[in-house]
Image (cartoon, rainbow, N blue to C red; front, side):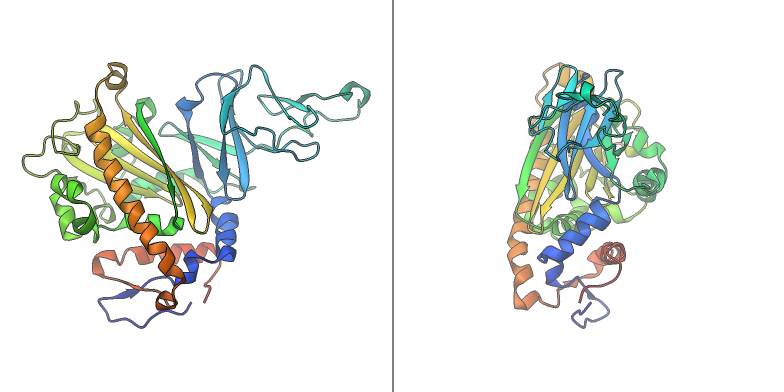
Length: 376
């Protein structure tokens, strides 16, 4: 990897082609998105047997559905007959079975082949062997995480471990009881930028004073470029006079019941590699899931989660949603401004990281390690 020589205060970034090269993106699909645990869907979105959703994980379409007995199941969204896509809609509901629209091969919600034209005339067809290809699935924080790996990595080490690394223990995140919260708002963003630019942006706050006036009003220490999520156990404290994590600092909702007193009036950010951001504040949780679609396009799905009684009561969540929606829009616009320059000869050898961004270098080392080396 060729980088620009830098002073001790400046650390080299990845070269620009890491963000534009289709071959590097293909390797990321294979060695990262298809090899790690990937946060796919919110469990409560599949609220009844037969509900399904399809998501893009690396190069694969993955089908997630709820079985007749209530468990979530994940499969490759491919009919075993001739390879047609089984479910062509992003989400939906079936009564009993999943049927391929090409030749009507039909599978139950556990993936077993149960019917096909003239199947009774083929008694030697093993209905389990020709069932849907299963994908490993775990539930955590109220979301279904899937892994396409033949032998998935340890979920506790690679996913739960990110929370431990950031907060010091699992209890600190479990107190928010995210799995019991209700969806107050979901916004999907189509970002014309490489997924790594979005991760790098989230990891640093050197830009916060420049583009996030609302956020720095609520969290004043961010105005100094402080990377709160870099320090174990630290949460950025609300400013004096700020009553809640809202766009104007006005009062939000009651603190979630099990959130500790020392977590009150604080914001915690967690990055779960490769594509999840978790934002914890006293009265709600904001969770981002990224779906890298191409080297220059990323879909980001952002959920605002509240205590069930807040959502059921019809309470106005606009002010708390608006704060991070503005942050998202500001961040994604910045990433989209950056993406075209990744192809510029000015960025051929990359850029630099100032001291408050040096921890991004750890992410770059992890990335190149996953790709098996460097790509000069």
